[in-house]
Image 1 (cartoon, rainbow, N blue to C red):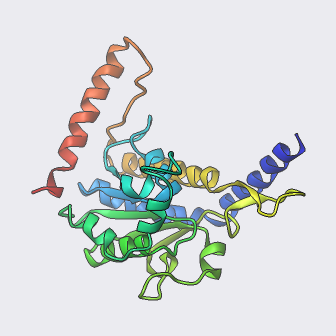
Image 2 (tube, rainbow, N blue to C red):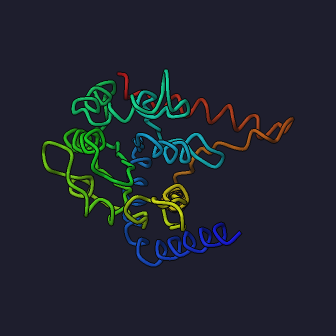
Length: 256
């Protein structure tokens, strides 16, 4: 079990470093998100590939609340099949194309209080940079969640020469090393043990809690999604219906 313990220890070090170095950025991001939601706006989350998991970690998730919208483009994120139909080659190819993110953005009428969180460990793919640029062009503040170490040493892939760290108004570093994986093992050419899921989920949940705290302090009570595992619990069932209805209402301005 040496490898398992080593992965645990290395990832725990990243989490500790996250707390030591990223609290100011998380607080700034929380203020942006709280301003958005308190003003009747929405905070969108976009990530392609594995990063889409961080969007879904925010919402819909027990303990989430109205105000968050996960922009999960299935054509860029469905990797379960690996080969064949809906396999890995297609999404990896599509994320290189400029113009794709703009077509996604065209599907909405963003409001004056909306904001965007763009999640990418590398922070260089054209679809990622274009999503951030397109959001800023529409007046949305942009928060980037990225590995600074990976992004800074990588060559820009977008025609503008920019990376996510160049575009985002607030950058939160997920602390992951270049390539994401933290564990070297004798006999293997490449590292294993990716850590961005762990540090990314921690960032998402810290941000969620910090935003909820700010909203309550402002007298804006978040409408939460309760656990649907409380079978037969009348209050939970009523709260779930309230969440559905309030979430529906929160989307109105996007399609007007």
